[in-house]
Image (cartoon, rainbow, N blue to C red; front, side, top):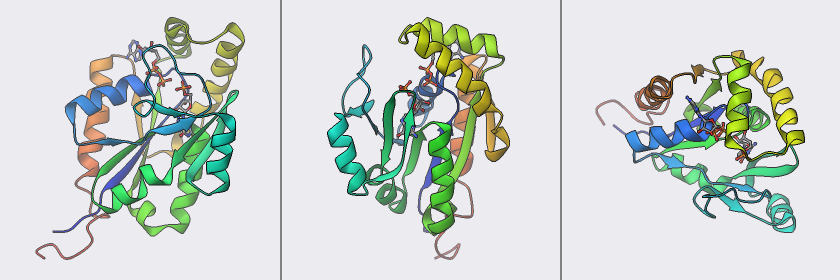
Length: 205
Ligand code: ADP
Ligand code: 5GP
C-alpha cells in the first residue's frame, strides 16, 4: 500500500505548552519531522538556530516572503513567524509525518491553502491545545519568564480570544497534567497514520 504522509497543525495560544508537548510526542515518535519555522524574534536561552527556529533578520524574512517561500506567515505580537514550504511539502509527499507549531492565524492560512491544494487537504489535521483554565495559562507564561509585563498582557488577552475558535479544529487537547496531555497528543499522531485519506493507490497494490 502506498501512502503519502500527514501534516499535523498544533496550534493554540502562546504559553499553553505546545512546544513542551511536541517535545514529548517527538520522544515517543522519533520519526516525526518538526517543521522549523523562521522568526525575527531573538532566541531564548537554550534555543538553537536550525533546531528550534531559523532566527532571521527582518530583511532576510521579507526576502523569503517576496520569493514565495512561505506556506503561511504571520505577525505574532511584535515579530514575524513563517513556515517554509520546503519544511513541509516534499516531506509529506515522501510519506513523512510533519508537525507544525504555529499560531491560530497560521492555522487559518493552512486551512485556506488546503482549499486549493489536494495534497494538503488530504494530509492535514488540526489540533488546538487549551489550558485547563485561564489562570493556569497566566502562571505558565509568568513561569517561562521570557516576556516583559507588556508582552505578557498582550499574550494573555489574545489567548482567550483565540481559544474561542476551538470548533475550527479537528482535535482539542487540554494541557493540564503534562503526561496525560502528551499521551493524548501522541494518540492523534498515531491515528493520523491510519487515515484512509492519504492512501494513494489500491489496498493490495
Ligand atoms: P508554547 O510553546 O505554547 O508557547 P511552552 O511549551 O513554552 O508553550 O510552555 C509554557 C510554559 O509552561 C513552560 O514554562 C512550560 O515548561 C510550562 N508547561 C507546559 N506544559 C505544562 C504542564 N502540563 N504543566 C505545567 N507546566 C507546563
Ligand atoms: P514563541 O515566540 O513563543 O516561540 O511563539 C509565539 C507564537 O508563534 C506561538 O503561538 C507559536 O506557535 C507561533 N509560531 C511559531 N512559529 C510559527 C510560524 O511559522 N507561523 C505562525 N503563524 N506562527 C508561528
